[in-house]
Structures are given as C-alpha cells and as structure tokens.
Length: 245
Ligand code: MLT
Image (cartoon, rainbow, N blue to C red; front, side, top):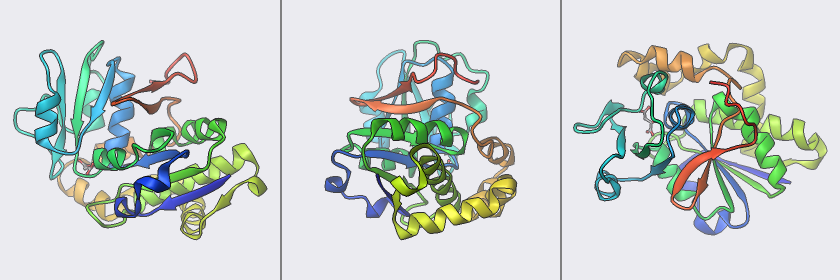
C-alpha cells in the first residue's frame, strides 16, 4: 500500500485522488468538530467552502455551523468548537458546515474513492478503516491557508503509524514527508497535548480563549467514529455499533 502524506491543501490535485482512500485532517479544529457533531445524532454534515454555498444549501430545520477567524459566523447556529456540541442534541438534524481550511480540504478530496475525516480523536479507527478498504492512501493536512500546520502533520504521523500496525510495516510504502511526520509523532506522542499547545495554531486558539478545545482535540483514539463522505454528505461509517462518546 502506498501512503502519501501531503502537508498542504494546495498540493492536492484531483487526479491524484482517484481510486484512493483520502483522509483529510484538521486537528484544530474542523475534523475534530465533525467527529463530535456526528456523535450527537445528526443525519450528516454537508461540508462547503464558502458562506454563499452554506446559505444556498440551508433549508428550514438545518443547522449552520462553522467559523471565520476561529469565531462563530454571525447568524450561524454554532461555531467550530467541538465542546459546543458535547451536550447538544442534534438528533436527525442536517448540518451545513463551513470553516476556513477543514471543509476546503474535504472539498479538495472529493475525487477519492473513499473520503474520511481524521483527527487525533479517531486516528486509529480511521487508519483501520482505510486499511480495510485496501486502496492506496492519501493523507491531506489541511493546515492554515497555504501553510503547513504541525498538529495536522503529527496526526498524519499517527495515522501512518497505525496503518503500518494494521497492514504490517513492510507492506506500507510511505513518502518521505510521511516518514518525517511519523517519526515526529513517535517522538511526541506521550506528550501530545503539550505538542498541540506549542504549535502556532495552538498558541492562536489558546490566545483566543479556546485552550479547552486544544485539550479536547488532543485525546488520542477516544472514539471509533470515522466520518465518511456519502455523496455530498459526511456521515458516520458504522464500523462499530457503539460510538465511544
Ligand atoms: C479551519 O477549518 O480553518 C479551522 O478548524 C479553524 C478553527 O480552528 O476554527
């Protein structure tokens, strides 16, 4: 199995995704939030790039969620903090989501045969699901605008490491950037929360008062929930009947 880790959304070209499993990562915070939102019983999430698209998709009864500059968008129901959703009852609701980078990453991945959302919260489950699909894997780090974000790279390293554990190390061929991210992950995995706080995005979110989100997003493998694209909607891939939340 070939596993290619891409450090920025800009590296992702539609033709490189075909017949592959694509895993999109935005640890702080979009993919961590998607996992949490899906755990609350919503029927699915439609990830879109722009506010205009979000408003075009929106119908009565839907929820609008997302951020710009890390803050809730005026008029939206929720922002992009996973903690906002921990107690929310979203039963049966359709959710329209737009964030600066994470939902853009998902859109870029849409040519993949399978498109998954990964974060530290579900890294192991995500890798095991991807291994089961038996396709080559592309891991896209959403980053921030056109810049690489280390927390996404560390999660890519976590998923690469778990893919090797699932498939056998000699059966996985990882690109050089993926090897670097796996080695970085192995180095910091016992202090992953500290590593997130040290990242540029960790500083930024902490300064904005979202330190609790960082601590939440640092909980490795706390759920089996893996969001997967079905048509235009992201839903839970029901690998296990009981979500861990
Ligand atoms: C994004 O998609 O750009 C991020 O999740 C931003 C944020 O943390 O709110």
